[in-house]
Length: 300
Image (tube, rainbow, N blue to C red; front, side, top):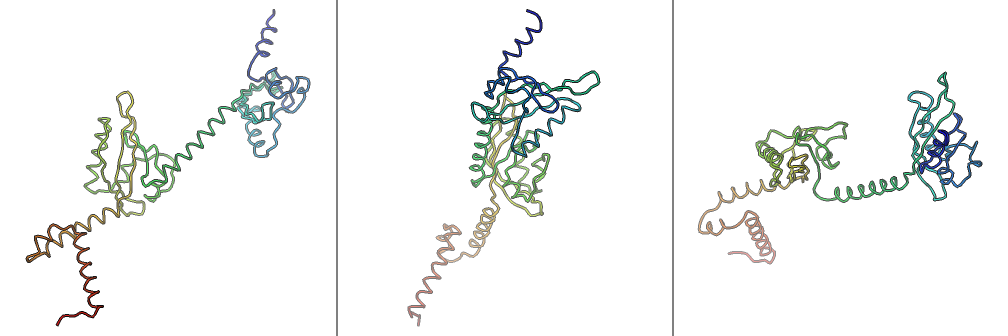
């Protein structure tokens, strides 16, 4: 057996498709794998148009890629969906030009591999990712991740909206959003401890500055991701607690005012009441007085 026979056997026995076509796109050769795929004989395929497409948008993509066959690098990669005996299949082609001594392209050789199953798996993964993100983004908490150097890897679109930010190319350090509030120092220390130890820290609060200059409070809950004993990322969630904090501050102020205004024999009893209970009892008495007035009962 000579060398020509060896090469022929290599091509003919390939499971991948191998074709050769003219610069005008007419098939010169197709190996048995391609003939089997499309369900046609070599004689039927010879001279037929290679890579026929019907959708205009798809044709434009292929044409753009195949232009590379006529200039450097004289090679291209194209994914082509074609009808076969097995139905619609995605063939990934790797093509390279054959040129004469003058550099003119005289033919093109391409090898193709069926990637249909892989493409469908990727589509399913993308679908599941979208569904998962929909579930994640519908909750009260918003999610993010950053590197041990504090560079953001992922930020929930809801966090960007909360901070008044627009989508940007490139990453940013999350610490750039921090205000100068003293409580932020404690929060940053907890993040640094989690990075150093690889252990989860208790939740904490931070004050952020929005793009418009206003300030908001968030509650942070995060977990270090450890690989080979080293923290490689921090993933976490946060919730907007600005209004909650305002209520807490208001209740604290109310308690101070209530304590300052208590006097007389009921002082000890009222001291045991919470601010909320005090106001309820106060409004309850006001309601009772109003009902008495409506009933016509009056003091003499």
